[in-house]
Image (cartoon, rainbow, N blue to C red; front, side):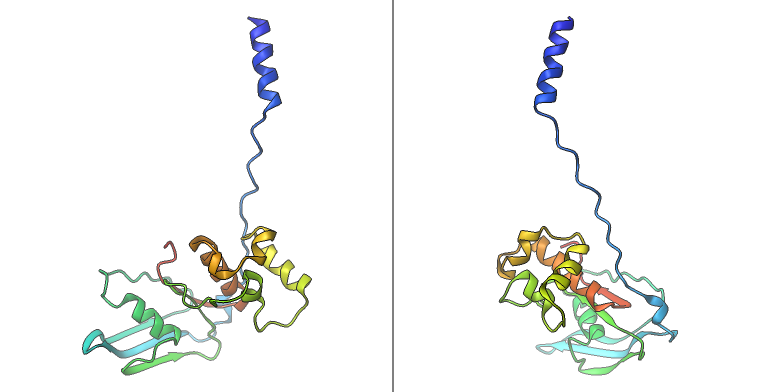
Length: 186
């Protein structure tokens, strides 16, 4: 029936479905070309113990330029500990960690301990940086990770996902060329 079809069309046009947002495009400056050394990061014969229990025992790993590795194992196997050692966040009980002079390590920690407890999202991103509010805000907004009102939210009030996005923004700002991601989908 023509009249019924026209009525349905009128109702649809009166309450349209909003257009989906533009897809997220991130163009980070993670530049492995700066890694002139064939081995930008290596750990050799590393041992780490907690309360007398060896979590890492004589571990040796060498990362080459352009390498992508995944570390898998059960909970408590030492995956996060190894990444903390490689990132320079934890000193091993024995062994060595060697990074080439051109290596800039970016570490995304599982527990988000690297984020400040106080201050706003904007303040966490801008900490230690030189620049005016508009310049730093513009850079942060160019990542398309946050809505403008989020910039003034306290870090403590951010969702886990927003905190993870802040960590990613900080990694991009640091221009890291070796990324260590500890359970990035958590």
